[in-house]
Length: 280
Ligand code: GLU
Image 1 (cartoon, rainbow, N blue to C red):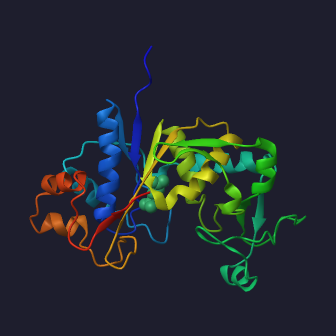
Image 2: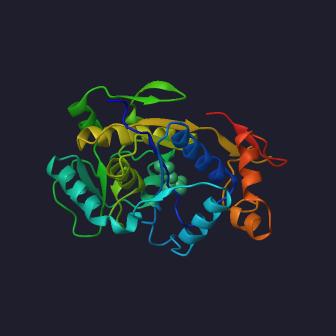
Image 3: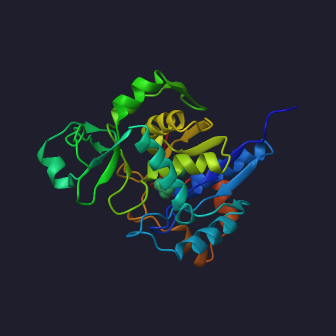
């Protein structure tokens, strides 16, 4: 028997229109799968109840079609809440989660160290004996999880073998006060459920992978490979973002631009003026 087929995915959050950085990411994931006779999936990550705009999911599909990509849809995150809850319960039973009622302001006031994704939670609520009677987020006890699992390694197609260092991010929130899961928990579970063998995404999520690898160990999930690609930056060296002023893919499409031509230029790393690729 040969190798199982490569399965990649593009997993946008519908909280703003897609831009060139997303096109770059989707094209890489699509082409890596196609080059290896694999599958390319689209998963809409829509569990952020306050920011998600459901109508954008169709816009994203029109954008991908316009770029000439072919994909298979898998269920959006909002339809998978039970699986997140079940995994969170399992982690609670294992003693790996603890409730945290700290507000952002309270955490800032403690002046904790800064990690790759902002302030690192200093563990104030860890060791609390009673379950709080007000809404709480659930945080992963990273130290305890690492003691249980020992050294973990993950493979990135660009960076090579990486020793997981989830302490970098500290005790991340896995279940939010107001939502059934955080990105880290939901994406890790979904990648396993969707049979993703090669997680392809921007290098800005590289450090989150340390946590994902830890969760895979705790929840006995299959361990894929990763491909963290470089990021498109604007003139000021900032990551292209939906909020900054590069026209969205939808704007380009509606204005009559040829999406397949744009996709070819992106493949050849020829980007519009002012936009450059910063390698991973
Ligand atoms: N939903 C995330 C985003 O739009 C991407 C997550 C991922 O690729 O793992 O930034």
